Length: 396
Image 1 (tube, rainbow, N blue to C red):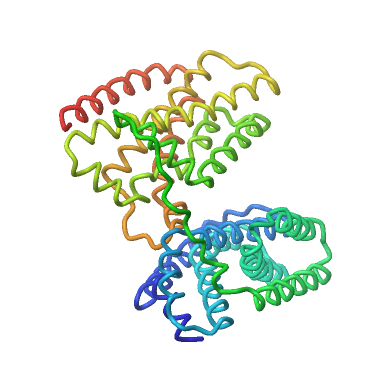
Image 2 (image 1 turned 60 degrees about the horizontal axis):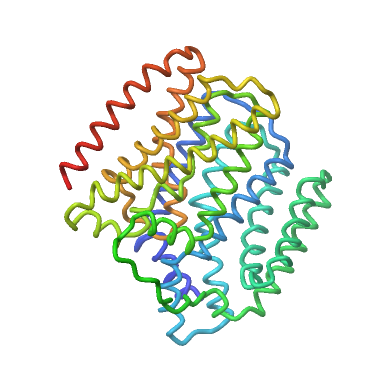
């Protein structure tokens, strides 16, 4: 089992497990820095447990559905293996990946910014462990999605409302044992999803980048789900009255901003074929702009219904942030694509995703203090867009 675990671990963590060591030191630095800053936020234990459970389950599901890891899994399944050893080696590796490289960062922040008791830390660790095994056991049941949804809803309800920690500990232990028993009966091939055969696509006389975008979204339903979730967030944000910062939050649609990073074949074609810089980047920018604008429009409509008071300048700010985010995202994707990633989850949670929102957050704070600043920003945006379009056409 150790040999099989090492085979999966070296794929995710590197030949010498250097990624685990690097991530551990980063988490230690984050924890120490926040702890020394004496910044504290009171967080209810049930909320913390709910956060770490849902986050870990989400990362685990992304890892299980990763296309890159699926190809590696296919090669491993060609070799002779022991079923239980294969299943638990695979799940253990993905669990370590989810906990150490992703949930560990969240726990570092939560532990540093709030005062935890040892019993609360123990319960949170149980929640993380339960999320790993439960998600792994529920993945083979994906054809019966309603069963897994009901199971997850019951567990999240128990975590949220069971304030008595001994009862919650007992519940999590029983649920984890139940998930492990399910995994003992799972076939290793259940974790490999065979791709559908190549479908005959309708031929077109002229090529279209927009057609590629829509086909890509059609093949990656999780990107659409992420977009719909952002629309749901847009409906709720007006209740918090945070002004232009809401537009920055709604532009944080990571999957749409990593099309070149996640598709190396597309990146090579765009970079090496003649005339592709302008032919691809300009439509790509417009595509992200329209997606951002849709979320901002939903936010403005929700704001008008709940609070009222939508003014011309707030509408102008929504359009500005949608376009500025699109331009910066495309420029960042073109000049600094994410390389060396192992599975798609690395792309979704890469620190680069916060570069554009951090810049826009400063501008949003400025607009909140001086609404007239939006006029200056529009002038700068027009100059920026003109320079980018001219450079793209000249390069094409």
